[in-house]
Image (tube, rainbow, N blue to C red; front, side, top):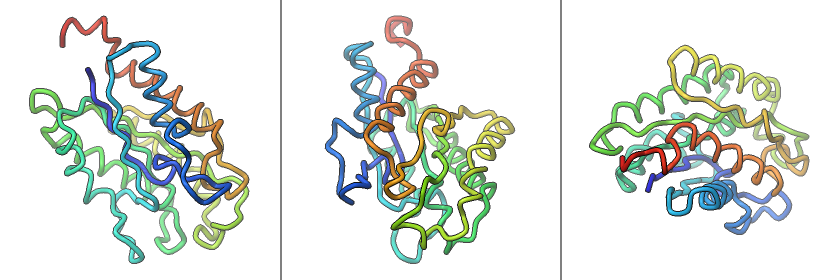
Length: 219
């Protein structure tokens, strides 16, 4: 069995823009990922969901302990051996109070990749594989508009810049905006249908990176 850790923010946690609560597990994309893999490869994958509302990549938030880089390695160690970590962060890095460009955000995610590649929390004390997922651009802003004031343009170039950094540093990348869009209820979070699309798309990427269970020859 291969272990996949999903490391993200409120969209990994399962924030519901309609109620400001949390979607049930069966709606959240990590659970859709798990169900999709289980349907195709029973017993082949274990999915660990590690989402936190407001989590950034490497930036300290004065309003909360949200810096993902400070929890990333303890998270991987607690679930080791981890075969693949899927990192979907960047939205909260674009909050107005940080004043960051989309390239700054991409560089923060690159730093997380460096941390993963430098650890020994994968199989046989090697590093886990890593997949960076660029969040989709902002939708129609409502209740979160003041948090992300004047950053809509940076959200539009975020996928491009993360993809460019991935190509430059040779790490796997997926642009969530190629298959989903943010909810018009708040412009940031995902509707149930988008969770489903994302979970199924990332199941394909996981199999691409880890291989089909029957092709692993006992690895």
